[in-house]
Image (cartoon, rainbow, N blue to C red; front, side, top):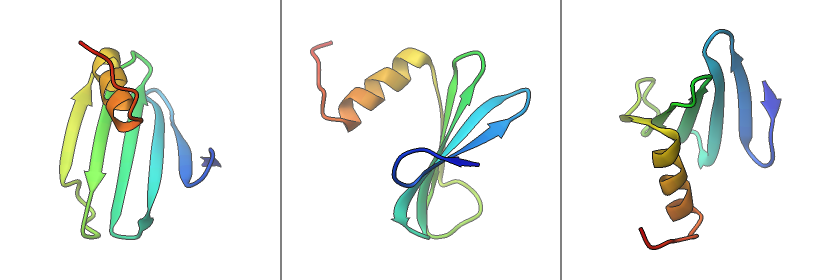
Length: 78
């Protein structure tokens, strides 16, 4: 797939949307986000080199925005 910025790989998922694989600098830890065409995001967290995700979260667009705001330290009062 395409490389977007530093360590983010984009993979087209026909009929589904796009998957963004975020390289966390360690082969053991990575995060993948599937952005579905309907707007839902699926967040997959992989740790310890396991092929299966340690955690999977389904996020609405609004939930994804909240999480992104916290991760980027752009806090807001809810």
